[in-house]
Length: 81
Image 1 (cartoon, helix red, strand yellow):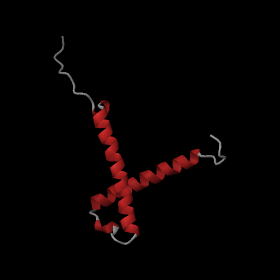
Image 2 (cartoon, rainbow, N blue to C red):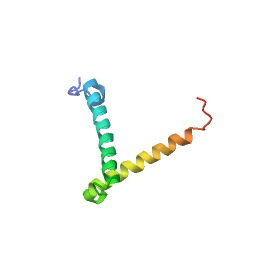
Image 3 (cartoon, rainbow, N blue to C red):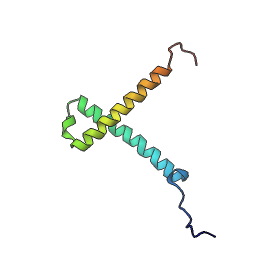
Image 4 (cartoon, rainbow, N blue to C red):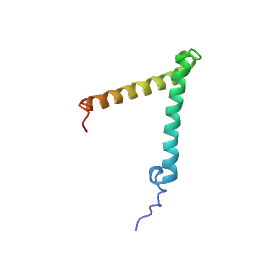
């Protein structure tokens, strides 16, 4: 007999938590796009953000660019699936 306590369900196992996490991810993408629009229109400067926020934004941009390039490598351009 063990004295292990039951573990609470993992966040990814709970549909409500998964839905909230998916919503958070979507909102984060919208926020990134909004920041890019504001910078492109000259309403905000990248340097207006604190250094830690700048680093996070740069990391996200680099990751998205890398994933985008990987997906392009998988597309051979012949139009066939």
